[in-house]
Amino acid sequence: MILRLVISIIICEVAGIIGSVFTTTAISSWYQTLNKPFFTPPNWLFAPVWLTLYALMGIAAYLVYEKGISQKEVQTALIIFTVQLGLNIFWSVIFFGLKNPLGGFIEIVVLWLAILLTIIYFYGVSKPAGLILIPYILWVTLASALNLFVIVLN
Image (cartoon, one colour):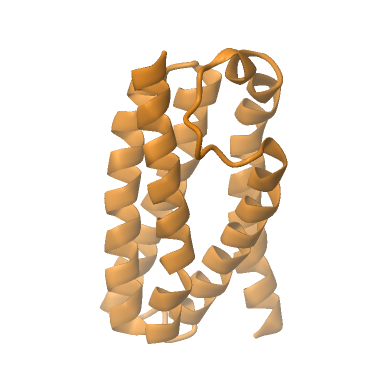
């Protein structure tokens, strides 16, 4: 039981680490040169927020998995979750790795929709699992606005 929880969290944190490979180098170079909106959080805030959000994703996935992986609704919810986790990584690749804010914005809109679907499906299987993801969609909403303003201001 605890091992499954730890594995779920580690999987999500590894997704964050993969995304950070593309983010870290761009933060101190390319991203620094961009005009950003007044509501941009300080750079130091992003890492602890994302670490927390990935941990919450892992907990949510675990709660759904524990409802019974043989159940169709659990399988569907976890497939949607896996897709959104992949989209989460891919945004970092597009925005920071490829230095493509427009492509990043298009992708983050798709990511946001995938997160919403994940919340809906997780909530249907485990209410706490769905609710745990609300901070995630709120943060991605902020990230979407930041992404859009980077396009507009540059």
